[in-house]
Each structure stands twice: as structure tokens, then as C-alpha cells.
Length: 284
Image 1 (cartoon, rainbow, N blue to C red):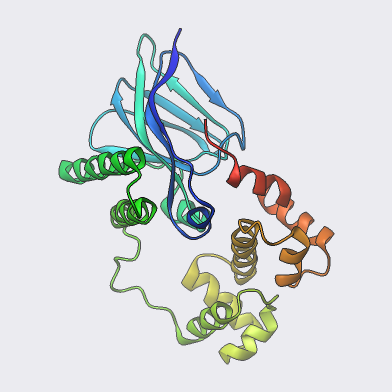
Image 2: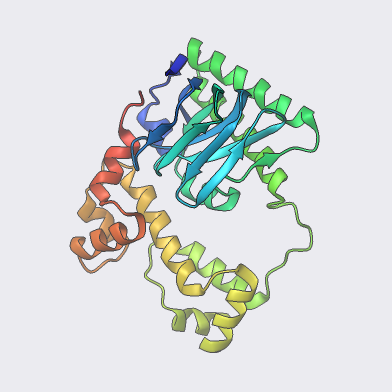
């Protein structure tokens, strides 16, 4: 029985890159002919992977999905429990891009963890692999501004994934004016603890009408949207080592550090301190 990773290219991003850029954490080839299990929060970031040979499945918290060779790839949240399951008498060989960035959780939500990206044109997957090779070269040589160049290349790959999912490329998607006012207001002051009632007043609609319009237009309740916004801002600030947890709680207008920690643990399953350790830890 063999589980191996070779070769592996480890990257140690700068603090500035970790805070504001898409950054590479590692790249390599994984080979296993037996199940390989990873516990929750064992690694930071996400993995965009594809299959070099063999077939099988990967099991994550939301279920199990098949993996195979061909013009397809999969996106995994490495902070979640996952198990690689090769088919019987098969060696499952994978490769891909292990990366992270300030808004990674939002991207994972938009793109969908575990869902297959199946490209109608094989050339799309060829293009992703070509970009992958360029990133490996940058990480290996580390020329001047290589972190910025890596950021641009990862952005290019993510753009291809957005297009494959049809995100941002629907010309007929419009928001009603009251919803646009709400989104603009929240975007203008993301640290404020907005209430639905004050947003209803800003939108020019009633409390009940805003709740109904928002759910219909955005696919989530306005309370879910506001909580998700606060969580995104919390994650962004916790990545900054210059801010203490107490200062993050203060900036986001929580009544106390304890209440902020309770909010964060309830939403993510880990404390603010555990999240900080996860995003800054070196990758093996």
C-alpha cells in the first residue's frame, strides 16, 4: 500500500501576499492505491485538482463524487474533512494547484466544493494545465515580482472556472432598485452592524417587502446575507497579524470579544485564534 507525494513544490508566501493576493501554497503530484483521509482544518486554502491516471472518488462533508481522467477538474476546501478513495486495484494519481487568498471562502461558495468542472472544449483544460506549469516555474525560480505574476495567473484560472459555472456571464441578471440600494449601503460600510429595518428604510420599502424581494433576487435571506458579510469581514481582518482579536471585534462593532468569538466559532466551527493559526501555518 502506497501513498506518496512527489515531486512537491512548496511556496512560502510573504505576509503582504497572504493579506492581499491570491498566493500559491504548494504544488505536486499525489499517488495513492489505498484510501487517504484528511481531518478537518489540517491544511489552509483550497486545491484545484485533476486526475493524471486512475479513477475513484473523493468523499467530503456534503457527499461523495467520482473523479476520473479527462477534461475535468475539481475544487476542494482543504479546511474540511476529505477522503481520497481509489477504485479497487487502481492507483489514483492527482495533481493541481494548492492556493489561498483573502476572499477564498466566497469563491468556494460561488464555485461549489466538489462539483466537477467539465469543459466542453478540451482546450480549456489544456489552458489550465499550461497556466499551472507557468506557476510551477514561477514558484521554483522566484523571479522579481513572482508573487504578483502568480496572483494574475491564479486569477486567470478562476476566471475560467467562473465562466464554466456561468457566474457573472449572464447578461439578463438585474437587481430591483431597492435591492441595489441595500447592496450599495452595505458595501459602503461593511463593518456596521446593519439591521433589516434600517435597510428597509434606506431602500424605500417595508420590512416585509424587503425580506421577500431580497430572497427572490439573491437566493438567500437578508439576515443570512448580513451575517455572511460580517463573517467575510472578520476573516479578512483576522488575516492581519497587526490586529488583535479584541481589535477585530471592536472594528466590526461586536459588543465584546467573547461575543465575537462565539459568533465566529458558531459560523466556522473554530475560534478566531484557530483560524489565524490555520491561515499562517506552513504547508507540508
